[in-house]
Image 1 (tube, each protein chain N blue to C red):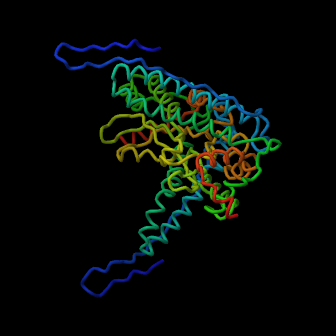
Image 2 (image 1 turned 60 degrees about the vertical axis):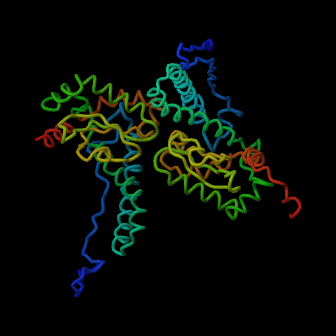
Length: 236
Length: 225
């Protein structure tokens, strides 16, 4: 995989293209932290199996293919090919990123799924949305209104130090909406995420998914990224 | 509805009220039973696709039209512009699905029979063969990222056939004003998932068995005259 380092210096002192050793790291499908049917009756085992083993696996496979092609194109200095590959990289890489987050955003009820956020994230939600229910209302509305395929996110804006609800189209990762946005929670609203069970009624899927949302994970990400000086402990 | 009123001064009044009527839309009937396209497309899919998805586009398009009418009447430019997304999405959904139902036909009524006459020759001229065209549509349809449509289009200006894709419910005309849709294949997941699951290529391979080339030929002959 790695090319030998070779430096060619032409006799008139200009330095020609130096071949350097570059490694290619491919990606693999992360295992689900629970069994396929563990989220029932909210999300069926059939959906979870297809979603993980087929959809997410395909993004991983195609991302790796795109990476290999990108690697070759970069070696050859083929700018046109490098640019031409960006669509496949964004779509498949984004699909891998988004689904990897999603599996962590879900949790079986008997392992804490659905338990509302407490502590810092809970307070931040109250501050930025008024209440937990208000946040859910907004995310459901945004998810239902999303045209076509995409994701609805609870994001933490690291710069503005506040929570926001965002949507992204297709497999665009959250960062495409803002470099300072950190995904705490993403909900897949592609039809494959719910159709076998909920058919055309996307809103029912959205209303039900809150029963298996893993707020513990979202809280951990939030606390790590927010890194508040802990004034809240003194004032409350 | 506003009555026509004309300002008496010689300068043109900023708001000229016209009398307008609003035409709303209804769900077109399917020209065949829900189960008539089996086994290529299941009756369950056809029923949901028509009664739920297409109906929702019609309902929401009518709503957007009412709101647009009100905004136009009031001279509310911001409101008018904001409604464009709902109009395009739902209006496009209605336009696209109305074409789609005519693009399909039960096998017993000629579905799947290859195109003859002028369209058949045009396909051979512009793609080499029907097989080559089918392969291209299948490959574009499979590669489409997210939701959308893949089209066989007639470019009226350049007088050639083209394969185009549109995202979400964008109608073909958004890809070029001179493009006429002859055939559209819905590649939104709702069009196939209950039957084909994630295997969109299998749906695409099979849908040709129920494609109504007669309708496509009629449109082609009318538009290329």
